[in-house]
Structure formats: structure tokens, C-alpha cells
Image 1 (cartoon, rainbow, N blue to C red):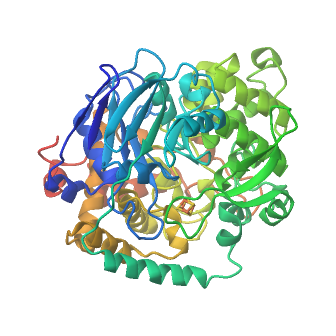
Image 2 (tube, helix red, strand yellow):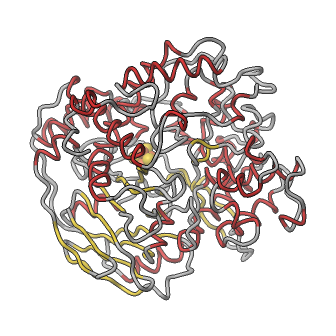
Length: 598
Ligand code: SF4
């Protein structure tokens, strides 16, 4: 791996022992190990001591399905906790071709800088002319300045201004979406990392990898009239609405009566441009692009690539059903470098605060009702530039509600500081437990219980399935395979076969289960070191209110609080974590081979 110190503008390589790869594999697992090893407890996520870890994964570049993604691990400035964020584009492939499984960046540059990593040659370039530039312009400028084939990972002004939920972006369409890695970049005066390499990829048994690849592509090609294939994740608007998951007016409900206007078939027909630059080695190509009028008023047409999460948080969650308006806000967030989930969460929170009288015209500078697109656009710009109420919101809804007070904490929709994604947990039995216990806060990518049932009865019986699904995600994120491969399908046992074929290790179902448990316990210990305990594994008050109408009318996240606590007890018991404190027990730590780390 490569270590870069921005303070001294120096670089060095570290050879990781094979036993480290065997225990932590790569991606999330290796990132968790390195982050725990490198950081002292309590360091400022926006100080020079924080580390940005870029991980490429053991399958990167090999002829396996949907493995062209990469992982960023850091301490989140939004939650103050462990953060792993997973992105696409060609950036991971280029880092791996440059020769690295991981790149760690520490320190802080004295002035705006961008880094180039070109086949092991590292340069520190001045970025004064790029500072203040939007993601679109900065990406194009850096692509022109650097060698053909370079991949650019860049932040916008939100990252420069250290908005706590700022993102970084590659190829204009792939973000490290959640938790504020873009703000960590900004705090280091690091505008961009440009990567390029020419090294060849190798694996222990490439023939087996090819064989699995052929089989899954064949099964994908057989699918016809399949929502994901036709529309990417936009097809989920209807599904989420039918299950009471679709976030509506700051999650006051899980059903938006105008959701049919956000119809992916109509969006494709009217504005669809097909797929935008998908991740390398992807047959599924989910990244759908649409043409919109540029938000700068120039009259030019630009591309906006949108996902379901954005259609939820910048759609129903702020009372908007006009797809062009959502695409426009999405483009703006992408250019400024803002997480659309947290941005939509913050705007929905502010709209509810305004409509309930907690915030006034004088506090905001204008009226801010649900459905007001112009006001939402104004607020997005104010968040990125941290002006007025935008500054308050730039810290996320948890901090904003503490500052605003007046009861606004009761409708601040977050877990551990991370705004809730576009899946209202009142739509599914036990989903709330996944949000309450995920190490990063409310994420929709940390394993769901295996049920379609509503939370109308005890969730205790689905806890084990949620833990199993979470373990599957740990493997997926450590191999760094796209989460959407369940559509291919690429089952768990084939992922293990791919891992063994790439590395020459001999994992099986049981040792992979131990591996996933090890990583879940390691990330928990990182958070315990930061002060997290059972008291923090909770849900926002909003999800203890009944849904008002729609398919899950009358539902709360659990039948009652006692059932949530019983489900949490079961979760800790399965994990081998102390049920009183939520801390992994010493027996668990020893059984997972983690005793030398803590
Ligand atoms: S399905 Fe989408 S996110 Fe997954 S690898 Fe393909 S383009 Fe990337």
C-alpha cells in the first residue's frame, strides 16, 4: 500500500503481511483494520490526524462481474464514527493498476493541492485555480491536464467548505455518498486525487473467475422486461411506495400520494440518455442519465444521473413530484459535491420546522414550504456555501436540531447523526434494527431482515436473518463487488469462490462468517472507543409515530419499544456483544483473533 503525508509532501510504501490480507481481505475489512491501527481515539475528523483510506479490493481488474468499484474509509465528520463509503467509476481500477491495494492520505496541505498517482510516481500539484470550481468543471479541467486514461476523484465547494455531508465524485456520476468524506478532503486542502496505472492484473485462478463471470452474465442477459435493467434504481419508486417505505415530507409518512408522477418509463421516454459511464466490468449499467436544462440559467442542456435514493429524498421527502425539478436539484448537489440523501433530509427537516413555526421567514430569509422547489434550490446553495440557515444545516440534522431547539429534535430524522435513507423502516418488520445498529448510522446498505412483512408483530424472529444479510454485505464490501449483484444474481457461495480464485486462500462458508463477524466487531470497537454504547443504538422519534395513510397506515417501526429492546438483545446475543453496554465481550474478541489489536 501507499502512504501519503500532505503536511510534508512525502510518500512511502508499506508491504502488508499476508496474514493481514487473510484476516481482513480488502475493501471495508482492510480499511477497518488500518483505520483502527492508525487513529487515536477522539481525534478531530477534520484535523490533520484523520486518514483517508482508498481501497481497491482483491477482485479489482479481474474478469469477474461488477467488481470495478472501490471503497473509501475514514472517520466521519458527520457522525464522529467509523465510515466506509463505496463508489464506482474507474478510480479503483486505476489505483490498482498503479500498483496499490490501498492508499492512505494523512496530514494537511498548506494550500489547495491535488495529488497525482501515476504508476507509483506521486506528485503534489497546486490547485489554487481549481479551488471554488464545481465538480463538473474541475473534473474536465483535470482530465485535460493529465494523461489520457487518468481517473479523477474530486470535491466541490461543499467539500472545500467542510459541509459535514460533502461527497467526492469520480467520472461525474459516482460519489462516495455518505458521511462526509468530501469534507475530510476539504479539511486537508485536497481538491482531487488523479490516478492512472499500466500494471497488469493477476489472480490465482483466473479461469474459474472467467467461468463464474460467463454464467452470471448469461443469466443476466436472459432477463427481459426487468425494472432494474430498464431503468436502474429509479424503478424502485413504485416498489417503495407499495411497501410504505417512500419518505414523504420529512418522513412524516412512508407513502406519497403523488409518487406516480415520478415514473421512470416516462422519464426515460422524455429525457433519457441511456446509461452514463458505468463502473468497469459491469454488465448491469444502472447509472441512468437524463437531459435537463442547466441550473445556471444559461439555457444549455446538461446530464443528470439519478438514483432512487435521490428520487426519494429530493422528491417526496421535500414534497416534490416533478421529475425535472428533482433532476435539477440532483445536478446541483452533484456539482457542489453534496450527499443528496443528507441534503434532502436537511431540507425536509427545515421545511417541517418552518411549517410548524419553529423557524420563521426571518430565520431563513424566505418562506420554506414542502413542495417549494425554488426555495429548496436556494437552500441547497446556502448549505454548500454555509450561509445563514445553510450553515446551521451544513452540520446535519442532529446538530441543527440541537442548535434550533424548540422541540425540533423530535423530527430530526437520523441515527447517530446520519440522515435516514429513502426506506422508511415502518415499511418492514425489523428494518429499524438495521438502522439502529449499523456502524455508520442509518444506512440502507447494512443488511435487511428476510421478510416482506409489515412491523405488525414481533421482529425478534427476523433478527438472525438481518445479521446474516449484514455479514453478506461485509463480504460484498470487502471483496468490493457491487451491491446490485443480487439482481444478476451472484450468490454468496460464488462470491467466496471468486475470493479464493483471486487470492489463492481457502475460505469456506464458516470462515467467511467468522471474517464478517470479525469486521463487524472491529468497526464496533472503533465506535466503542469513540464512546458509543447501547444507549446510542436507537431510532429517531419519528419512527415511533404511526404512519398516517397508505399501505402501512398505523405502523410504527416496531410493535412497541419493548419489542425493539428484545430485538436488540437478540442482536447482541448473536454478535457476542454485552447486552448491557453493547461492547463486544473479551471472549468474542479472542475468538475472532482480535485480541492483539485492542
Ligand atoms: S450496477 Fe451500477 S453501481 Fe453496480 S457496478 Fe454497475 S454501474 Fe456500477
